[in-house]
Structures are given as C-alpha cells and as structure tokens.
Image 1 (cartoon, rainbow, N blue to C red):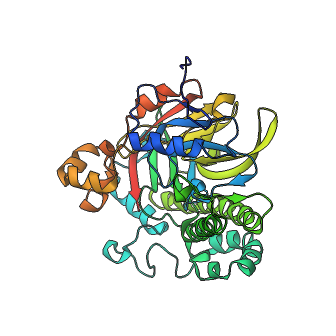
Image 2 (image 1 turned 45 degrees about the vertical axis):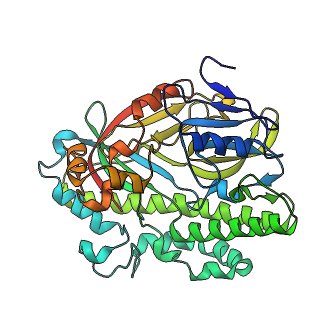
Image 3 (image 1 turned 60 degrees about the vertical axis):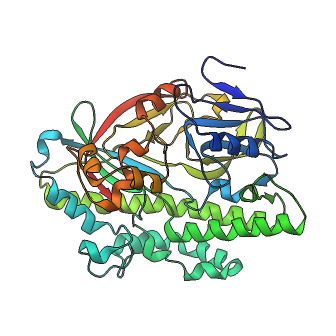
Length: 411
C-alpha cells in the first residue's frame, strides 16, 4: 500500500509502519526492528519512520513511537534529550578571519569535549569534564539541583555521576560544535549534544529495571531492548520524573555551551555582534505527552524532531555536508515530526575499516576541523545523502536556511 508521500509497511499482528524513506536506503535489520516495535500491544495508531531511519538498540534511530499506557526506556535511549541548538548572528562571512585555526582552538578551549583531553592539550580537565566549573555552569546547575537531589533519593547511584561537572560540555562521538554560513553569507553557530553522563546513567538504570520487570512477569518480547514500563507502576513514575529532568539538563547543557561558544568567538573576532536572531534549541532523543488523533499519548522520538506547523527545527548533515534550519508543516501522519539528521549507513567500526585518513582529509576539504584517525568514523560517507533525506520529507518540513560549516569541533 502506497501513499503519495510515504510508504506503508503492514505488520502481521501489529500496527502499520508509515515510512518517509522514498529514495533513501533502509537496511533489512532496521526494517525488522520497526516490525518488532509495531507488534507491541500498546502502540497507538502506527509507527512513523523518518528518512534517516537506521539500526539502533532495540528500536530504530529515526523513528517516532506513540504509546498508550507504557513507555520503552531503550527507545528513548541513553543519550536522553540529545539535540541541536543553533543561533544566527549579525556577523557576515567577510567578518571571519582568513585563518580559522585560532577560532577553532578558542572554541575547543572554551568547551570541554572528547574523551582523551591529555592528548589535546587540555589542562585542568579530565575526559571532557570541568574541574572548576565557571559561573554560567554554577548558575545553570542551581536551577537543576533541587529536583536532581529528589531523584537521587530514589536512585542513589545517580549521585556518583558527572552531573554538575558535565553541564556545559560537549561529549564525544557525533556531538559537535560548528561555525557555519547560510545561503546569504550570514554566520551561524550550531552545536549538538545531550544529557551527558547523568542521562546515560538514568537511561541505563531504567532500561535494566524494565528488563527485570519483563523477566519477573514472564513477558516475552521479540527483542529484550523493547522492555517497557507500564503506566501507574513505581518504575514508570520514577522514570518519567527522571527522564523529564534529564531532558531539562540536556537543553540547559546546550544553552551553557552556546554562551561559552559565543564568548570564545568574541576573543578572536573583535567586531561587536549579536546572536539572538532565530535561536533554535530542539531535542531529538526524548519522550513527552502530546495530543494526536483525539488522544493524549506518549510520543517517543528516537532520532526525530518535533515539526509542528510553524515550529523551527534543525536537521544537520555530516562533517563536510550541508545542514538545514527547517520549519515544520505539522503533518499529523508523522505525529508532527521530521528527521534529526542524515542517518548513518554503516557502523563506526565499518567506517574505520573502509576509509582511510586520506579519505577523511579529502571529504572535509575546506572545513577547519580535526583530520586524524580518531574521527574517521564520522566521515561524511558513513552517512546517508542529506539531499535525498530532505527530499523524502518535503511534506514534513520546509527549508528556511541552508548552512555550510566552516569550522567543526568534534568530541
């Protein structure tokens, strides 16, 4: 069965899956994960698969999972609240220095990032954490601490996480900070990160509790990572409280990084500039209650962005590829959602096996960024074609700005 804008995969003994993947490859393993999730008894209406959909843990990255009466912690994942923030500035391309190396260095010094800081010249930081957090971190943590302390009364192990010291830090993997130009030469700052170590600890803890509950009640699942917490149970209520806090932490984390990023740029570019123009801050790994098709339901977006009518969002490409500021069209069939990026076509291990440092240098030509063997797994060819991804979801969003990165800081 086909629709003009999406394809429908009918699942035996399950809900259908509506897929905005025309012209974009989807691996068989991802299709199986979509089918597995669609067979859960509490799925509401259908699952929506975005054009960047690919294999994840338990459920696919790039999917929207609506549920009634239950939540799947592994579908939200461990990078709770991971998302994007972008800010348009009053700077123009001509205001940037010819040599962008010092600009990248200033940003790297201002925002802790990565996992091996000793090899990157950091002093006073360990594994991308603050040793002495600056005042903006203190002020932001003060708004988060009381609720965190209440959550720790129920889950004491969270006290030992790098919560406070990770606030305002980037992390590793596909997290990044970029300086970009839009289609008319305006300078943008953009970054990608989430709830860091404390979000990981919350996600991992409740994923394991859900699995234990499934074993206790002898509930068989097509994949143990689809273990769920039924509404009304203690673990469900504790999870909803903790995940909501982690999502606040993630949003605040991006805001603090953006403040430090702007301050760092000002040390290199002395021309006065403003950055309040069209700032966007959006999650793409999260769960929240929304109203769809006449009911209040839980919507889990795992690698997907809210795209309500008129709502601004960010769809980044890979290193060396374009990114987009988009405006949602409010398509009800996608539960008002769109993709969160290009989506991987291969694992990090496969990317390292297939490509060389010379390939990475060539693929990121013209971008001031790390060019070493430790970032080969982020090479653009490991991702889907962002142009094909955007074309496949043209009924979900419209492009407002097209961004091309000049500076890219990777964790």
